[in-house]
Length: 311
Image (tube, rainbow, N blue to C red):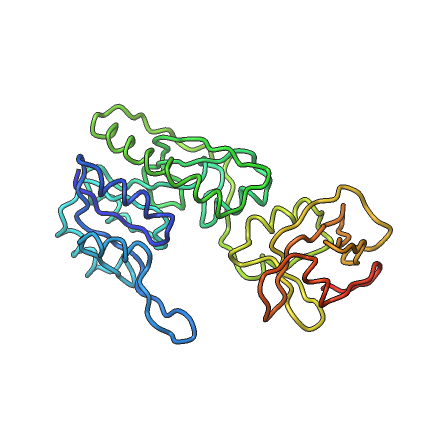
């Protein structure tokens, strides 16, 4: 098949790489988000997908709005049997969805209809799912509401982070897309309509999602730390600085103290009482400092049991 690929972050690259390496398909163009200013210098930086495509000599397009009539006409001029979309970041119009012979196929990092939306990997960890996976879907005008083509399950380990789960889903996503395209050509796939009553929504993450609310239970907070570590980060206020939590353990018993109070201090770690159970902090990062284990933090920031040090 001749394929137009639409994607933006690192997670999209293994699927694109699978298409590039495949003898059965030819990527005729890549569409990704425009370059963005990064860091203090404000230097424009291409998306990971753009960098990959350019290194492989694939034509790249970076429209501000993919639905603009001018760019739709550009798409019409590109040879294409199917459009493959994975974590692209813009909504496709009906006109684009109906343009290719085989339509538009989305590779989504959840077992649809569970976790439609922008952050399925993170929310699957936060909500305590024990299994997730990858779904290929025939796209329609809704948000991840199209008919399901194929699925592949992947277990979520008890200590899974968003980063480790991203890595685990890369190969299944690549393999599932290639199988989907093969079976579409063969006519051996029967699309399955999604059950609306089973759907959940993985809302986009903001900085506020990372603020620790110690009135929540310790199990929830520990899962947030694993899910949101890189972005937006899980943090609270210590003194007049931000303290970021990188690793924690749940102690499934309550202390005599109120939520947000230091409930135990040892040489290697400290605990904070939550709405249910205690959160034992093992790795933290104080604003302006490097990530460190709790013992190193305590050396410079002595805490006392019963102290309300965190907000």
